Image 1 (cartoon, one colour):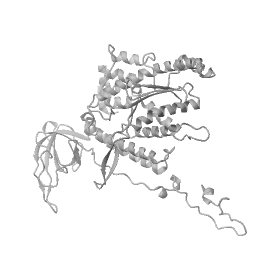
Image 2: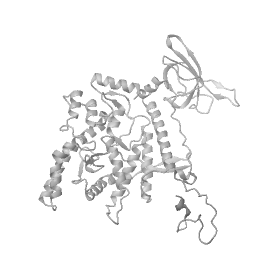
Image 3: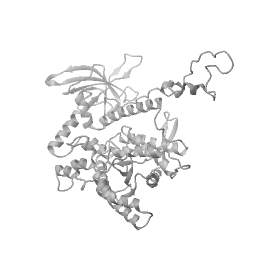
Image 4: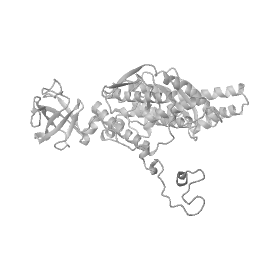
Length: 515
């Protein structure tokens, strides 16, 4: 936890209301997200009990599994869920746009928009990941076949769960994480995973204080948990009777229909409060203006959606159960690069986030007191434009001479530290030499060089391109890390008839003997 966030949480506790830790919204919000509130049976590994699904506050559809331990009912639930999710995904596969690649020498196409799934908390993301893993490999023929839409649903749920691991992605949002990214509450990180408690700090119900709203959030009668596991007391007190009655009914007669209706009423009452809270939370996020770089990250989500849709259309296989050594290394490297880029972009978009870096010495702000926009450096083979400016700051400057700094106002421009001079009243004079972002001529276009009196923030954080690392191909990977098997060193064959000691197994494949 950063110093500023810890301070904000202390202020939230003292003031009795959540404190903002962002001035802009750092994620994309779809005009038509698909909200999914899952519910699983307590004590069972990913046994779906019910789900409330829909793309509008008044369009909720309730899906239930009367007997979560029953395999046929679970996959019937998956088929019913696929009947909602897959058409929603297909609705974004209409219009495409051309994107220039290879420096404009070629183009590729991607969808102009992409779907967005929203769940109440990270437990919902885990549910989708596990449910996707349990369905994407199911067969549609042979023994125990499932509906053809079930494995396709599993592949798409796995796609969204993997995108949720990508820093900066908005394809699958856990609402509690999205809210606490922008506001700090006066409670612990564990309590921040409880959506009613978070919204009690952000937007308490009318007539209630934050303390009263927090107490109300802990009352299962007012705010039933959808975490997504149920409360065991709820299972014993409410679900046991209609569930047993449904199981005991011999056919789809009156007794079974009555038990099903009772289950449906109980589960809707359990999920409906969370459903309403999710849409309230989305409304709070929508009130924030989006950051300047949010659209670029959403374009990455649209690229990923387009790529996976093309993979599915081409008959590609499901995601593997586990990555190989090279694939795992590539994936980790990609996530690390995305995390670094996301941290920089958030700081560039938001002064409150940049303030955290100013506390650590990675950035400082000051006023431009001198500027020489026409300075030309002619010491090289040809003269180049190298303006200099002087920035006076009252903040500590923890960068050495020669360090390259960047400004969020002009991210394509580099500022090299030439002089650091202590001044009166604890101030520091920083002389910077500018390069880049001013065209190719010897005259700087207006606005490309900071003017005297401009307030400037300078940081060591760079939003420049991060090149990808190089990894061996599977053929070049050692056998110890999943590559091709090493050729065994075999002894000379023994004399005499028949195969010697170096012979392989009966099928003649020595690799099997040494695997």
